[in-house]
Structure formats: C-alpha cells, structure tokens
Image (cartoon, rainbow, N blue to C red; front, side, top):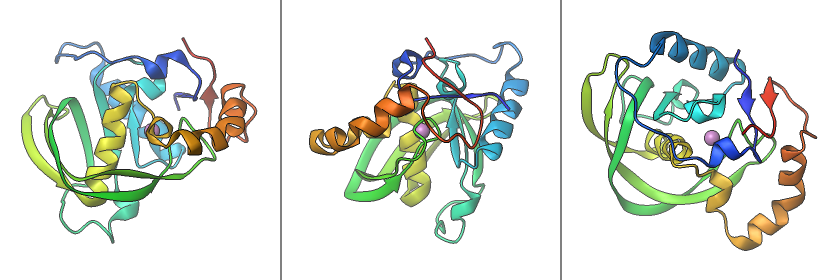
Length: 184
Ligand code: CO
C-alpha cells in the first residue's frame, strides 16, 4: 500500500488542484488508493493523504451500510468535486482520520450536502448526499481544501489534544499501517 501522510505534514495543509482525464496513470492511482484505504481499514481516502495534491477522493462506506438507507453504490470515486451547498440541521458525528491515528472526536456539520463531481470515467454527476454518506464526503472534501477534522474542533478541545497531536507529528504513534511523517 501507499503510505498515509500523517498529521503535521505541510502537504496536508495545501489546497489541491483539479485534474483532467489525461492525468498520468489515474486508474492505477485510484486502485492503489483503494488498496491503501482497505489495508488501513478506512471508509474514505483523499489523494493528499497519499501525497498527491489533486482533487480526488474515494469512499467505501460499506461498513456503515446498515445505517445508510438513502444511498446506493457505497463505493465511489469523486474527481474535481465541488460543494454547491451545505444545508439542513447541524449534527455531531464521531470522526476519525487515517492521517490522525488514535484520535476520534465529535464534529459538527450540516446534514445535507449538494455536490457536483466527476466519477472515475469522467462522467459528470450532481447529487444530494445526507447522513453518514454525506458526512464522509464532507470530511474527504476538507482534505482537498487542506483542512483536517481536528481543525474543526473548538480551541479548547484542540488544546486538550495538543500533546497527542504533537506525538503524531513526531511519528510517536502505534502504527497499524504504513505512514509517512513530516511530508512536505
Ligand atoms: Co481524513
């Protein structure tokens, strides 16, 4: 698998750029991303997490299939996604991130997201996503903007997590999958 870029890496803070269908070896990259996501037991993975600052993320929400009634095809590729709107109620959901191992926190976001994106065949889609599927999209989309879920916590919460986060940045974590630290 491709190693996952860890918290503290400047590459996770970059805004990613759009790609077109001529992006070199795109299909191969996508299959490597799936491999990395499954090996690290994630439900989503964004390209910046494997060191590519491009607007691409994948999701396989199958582990949540019992709770996701409103969407089919729980495994999908999102290329050049654009959030059109985030509406509905605020709700808290316990998020984690392969780049931030060992930390899970409740994050507040809107429950409905309208998204335009291209799939792996560069077919355009415009869809509304809700619930947990929408939540995973919002989390992965943030990666393309250089935002991590811990950035969305209160200053107080972040202060409490500071020690743990600094340890991750230094590579002092129990790694259950391959990671790379301080990636530029
Ligand atoms: Co993440």
